[in-house]
Image (tube, rainbow, N blue to C red; front, top):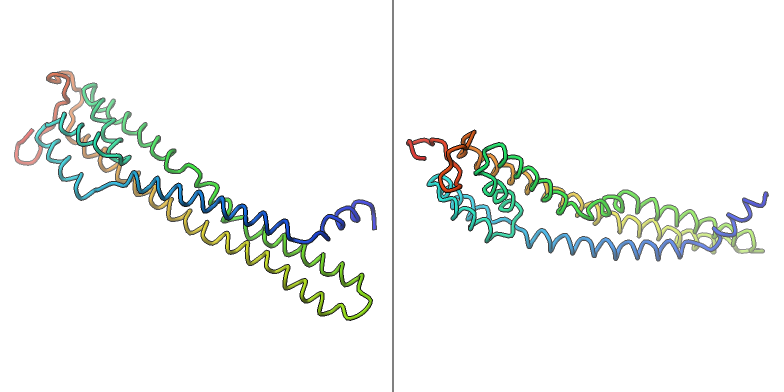
Length: 227
């Protein structure tokens, strides 16, 4: 056995205790991220059934100031995206569209924050647990080589203890994957709702908007001949 192998063996025979502590630490960090993201999504929730009919009425009747006030009252990112377009609407349809696209990118970056940690943890926690199990098995066989007799039960007990690391790794990974997928689904919904509101505003704007009255955007004719 060469020196490098001996060195690695001496490191491995310490067992998987430190791996378990690492998994516990990662688990606590993942729970903190889940709680923080849950609070963030809740605070910025969008009351679609209340907001959309009111904003459609404001746009249809060209009540632009009221539409902006309605958006400012909401903490939802969907409303912020629409507000960005309303503020740039006097400059034309293209300017409003670009402003809403930029705000939608900001929403995606904000809501996606720390989600990569959950995804990475969900993908790698089982491998960390498996690594701890391997170290535990090495430690068990090292004990067997030092035992003069009756080492079998001790080895079995060591292997059973080593498998705890794999179980803990799975226990850490499963909630992380579930919440990662859930948050990404919510992020997708927010972005799609923002896109829908953006298209809603654009249908009421003309290009170019060179004859805006008092800095207000012009509107296109809707069904029924209303402006």
